[in-house]
Length: 319
Image 1 (cartoon, helix red, strand yellow):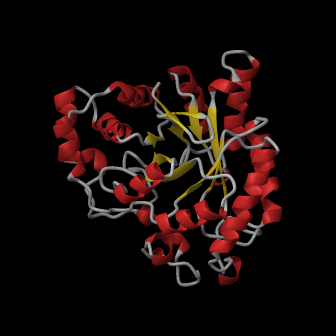
Image 2 (cartoon, one colour):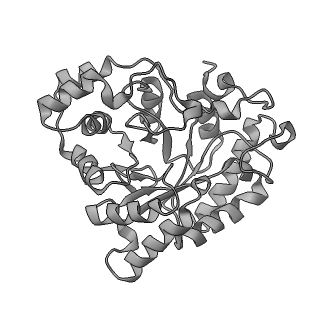
């Protein structure tokens, strides 16, 4: 398995299993099949509502001796309703209980958007906390304390633009080990990746296959789904692989980790093969030309008229 070395000394398997949109009942089957196929990196989150059943699978494999804890790299994420300092540790402890683990290898602030603690998804304006990057920094400092206590091995962020990341990076005592962002041939994030490389922050790509099963309320009917793109299909034919493997191998060649989601054992195995798929420079340049800045998971549900947040606040860098 290809790996990335993190600034905190940890080693991140470059291909992991994403568990977003994996429903109850599916998650346990998918994680069990992924472990059997050789996956050791698993991307979880409180808001996915499936950590308890994933934890049962981890417990079974670990207690039976089929795998050792140090072989696994487990990520989870702090949801938007737990950004106040007093809510962070209880959120981490809940995740650890559900996943049946003593520590997490990586814990991410899921979004820079904050809700009140009484809701997962706000329905009223008063359930949003106003935009405040200082709150994000305070949340970060609380997570740093949990690193020192041994509950977390590494911390990072998700869905964070460069200027916000840079502000937090400057204020942090423990620097972010990983930034997780949407990243695929339609949204290549070149400037953000360059900044992260310069500052020793590893990048993990979510939706690396274009999230073809993303919810209907964020689906753009005018977009050619990534895996149907003729360029990827042609390169898949040239390499004797699949469009999915080509998309993953392209990100891996940029030293970007990937966390594709699948519940099908054959797809799980095919995705792992991307680690050994070689793309020529010419093939990679053809994929580079697909970049159009298309963000498929843009946070728009958090930016309704009742919300104080906007897409500009989320994504537009000030410099």
